[in-house]
Amino acid sequence: MAGREGSEGSEGSGRRHVRVAVIGSGFGGLGAAVRLRRAGITDFVVLERAGSVGGTWRDNSYPGCACDVPSHLYSFSFAPNPEWPRNFSGQPHIRAYLERVTDNFGLRPHIRFHSEVRSLRWSGDELRWEIDTASGALTADVVVSATGPLSDPKIPDVPGIDGFPGKVFHSARWDHEYELRGKRVAVIGTGASAIQIVPAIQPEVERLTLFQRTPPWVLPRADRRITAAEQWLHSRVPATRTARRGLLWGIREMQVNAFTKRPKELGMVQFMAKQHMRKAVKDPALRAALTPDYRIGCKRILLSNTYYPALTQPNVDLVPAGLKEVRGSTLVGTDGSTAEVDAMVFGTGFRVTDMPIAERVMGANGTTLAQEWKNGMAALRGSSAAGFPNFLTIIGPNTGLGNSSMILMIESQLNYMVDFLRQLDILGGKIALNARQSAVDEWTRKIQRRMARTVWSTGGCDSWYLDAEGRNTTVWPGTTTEFRKVTRRVDLAEYEVLRPGGATAGTAMAMSTGGAPAEATA
Image (cartoon, rainbow, N blue to C red; front, side):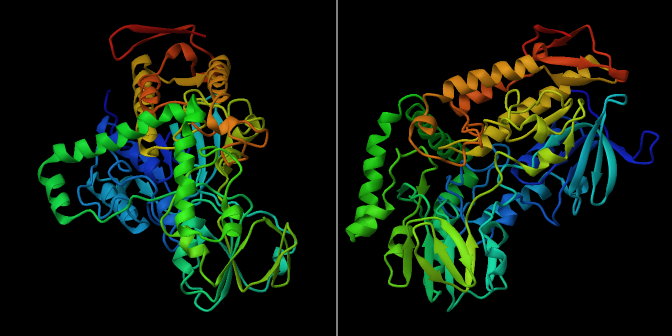
């Protein structure tokens, strides 16, 4: 790809113009920045709303926060870390890893901190994005949105919550200045964050009340300290590190068919989860309340060795119901039960299927991405939405995973991003690529057809994978290998080629990576 050098110049508006603007500095944004530099593109900026990098691993700093994917798989292939301290490393180590990636690849000069994106508007005349941020305005030829689906907390609108006299916060906005010791604390929700928070705070609070709308399936967490000898070996003999990562990846690839094609094969896994619970929870009534009524895998499978033991402690109460309302300092469950508490911690997830960034992006048709997605998110190969030229999403629709590392999916989308920019170079001149609506529709139809037989659709649960219409617009129904293949290069037949002034190119020719031409007609 032809290199593009950095520029502080503007295009007649007095605003800085860049070739690429990346939104967010989590795994997706930092990965995009590294791949841009490797492709010889230095004319880019990373727009970050906070004052440091890290994304969800900066925002989520609650007690016990850790990853449920093995560390050697939950890291960039181009930035291995031989010094991971545990099989499943904690939030401080993951955040430190992202800081090192930022420094080692020279990314800091490209990052604008405290630059939350307020709006993005496509200019069809200029074929560029006009971007308004908290630190000023700029324009860009291409925008890469890497805000991630786990970035904006979701707190349910519970009647009476405004009158609660105590402390209220979300797990992703943990108030470290608030002392929980000796307090009566309610945890709302039983997702991946909650099962880490409960055992972490249970020993210090006076009383812990867990509101469980739906019980999760929980498996043992095969965590241990990675020895100094292992770290030394991985550092001195990189092949061992590669082999470890490959083994972790391969095991998860072999599990995919059970989730996507043959959910009944998950029966043995479900039996293991029941045995895991039985070992820790001796009370039959509590076990019954903690046993899900849906097939394992339908909702995210959680990993913990400490969650069930914490629930059996004398200072813990399980409310097998959701939170209905708040009356002063009294919380009322949907089953009528009540609890007097001093603090409420919401572990109620994020705005996944209605990401706030979509409300701020105005496309070629004068509508926002949120408006276009009102009936469900849809993007070609998880990256390009029709009507939003030169706009790519990292971790877009149907790119999530139920059993493996999202870093694998991110790297595949970064391959697509690099080839997208390469195709623009080949076509030459002032140009933009806009995903054809027909291509997006066909891609979405294929995804939804495959989704019908998966455990997420047949398992009998209501999960955060589903949107308001009950469609799974979140998860990828295949292997990471397959996703890498379908995002290896841009197929120009799936795009309209736009010229300045609103014209479309009649026919565009581009060379694929294999040397064969790919033709697209407008």
